[in-house]
Image 1: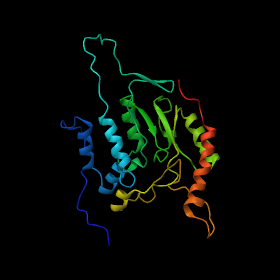
Image 2 (image 1 turned 120 degrees about the horizontal axis):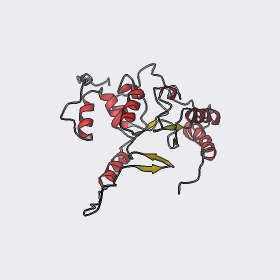
Image 3 (image 1 turned 90 degrees about the horizontal axis):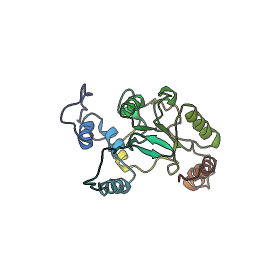
Image 4 (image 1 turned 30 degrees about the vertical axis):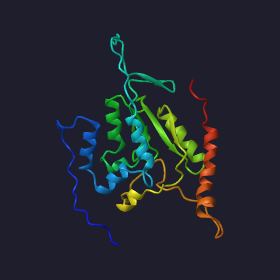
Amino acid sequence: MGRPMNAFTPLAPLKQIPAHLQTLADYEKQAQQHLPTMVWHYLQGGSMDELSVQANLDQFKKIQLIPRHLNDLTQGHTACEILGQRFPHPIFLAPIGHQQQFHPEAELATALAAEVLESNLILSNFSNTDMRNLKADNPYKWFQLYWQGNREKSLALVQLAEQQNFKALVITVDSPHTGIRDRERRVFFQLPEGMQHPHTPTHIPLPEITENQHPVFNGLMQIDRNGRILNGSLHTPPCP
């Protein structure tokens, strides 16, 4: 079967923030109108039946605020300390790859928004923007690291992030290869041809295997096994 016809035309970028955008849900609904259908499903989707995505949303619904009536709150604040670093508030921007799909300035636009709001930016390993192009003196930024297939390439990224004043690493170890993303396959999602990723190839090459070897257990898992070296190399004691 061929690709389904899609008559949806994304809206042009907003020139100013309309008054009706008040909540995160408002922004989410508005954003869908400005992105191609396959890009929206990439942004919103998860693996297979997306049970983990739904479980995460359900956990957020269980968070409740405890009333503190009849207390002196004049010294209240939203500041917090995480991994020895103090933040104005605990709202961080999660690592999302391929951000050029959402904005022509990609992660530079995201970094600017994060800086204005003093939010900690976690730059994806699959960033379209070189980390050296972000403000080196901005203290509110961490780097997400995927295992690069060997220790030397991974360590080079760690050292570059350290040079660029990234304060911590967010290491992703459960995704040595693209997962089974049914939602993306249904809408024929694919990255634009020629999209640049300065810190990693879009797909890490699999090891060569013989005719009698299994492509997953002898190929893909060979990369995952090597990734355990990274765990030992970068291990730090847990925070008190």
